[in-house]
Image (cartoon, rainbow, N blue to C red; front, side):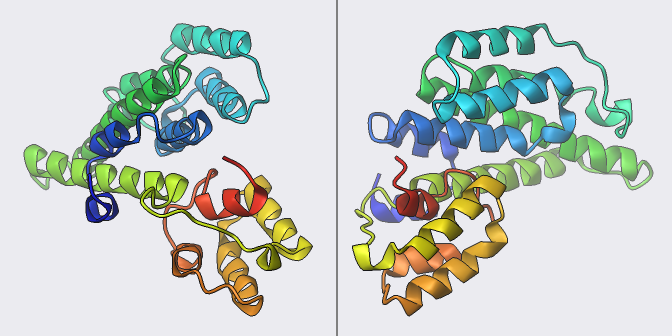
Length: 241
């Protein structure tokens, strides 16, 4: 894979294959968590809690035995439907959604990333297509067209999430000491803790005022889509790998 391929790729499986041995376990697991969160409306309390443990495990806050226990809970979780969604909408999507949470708790980080990506994508596609059919029962929804469109959208979104987590692996991002003042670190920590990505534009502004001219850093701060926990710019400022 070349740099141009990485920046334009729309196949998360291909990007993950390239990242084997290159990305940290933390980054891969946070990507997996972000994929699952795309279909969080399909989770029951047990799987939602298991996903929270997966994120804590990625951050080194829980042990491997706790990870295994959470995965066992997710595997045993029943199929109680979320009351806000009609059964017709989720009947075929809740299975792969549950699988995604089990995948994200896999022992190996690369398996967590690839498995959760695949299962969550499947869940999102089925949910999208079934939503259209249920909401427009007389519109004659073309299942194949809707499926292809949903698949394209979800895979592209996952690729954007992966680029948010990893950045550009073909370039080494460096944050000058002069830019890493306490105010910037505090702002990055708030963004990280609260997932308040609306503050990213303000982060870019402050970095620019401090003399930052790194186009990759500034442009990523200013995008308005798919920032997730594990964002490479926030991690760079906070010293996370």
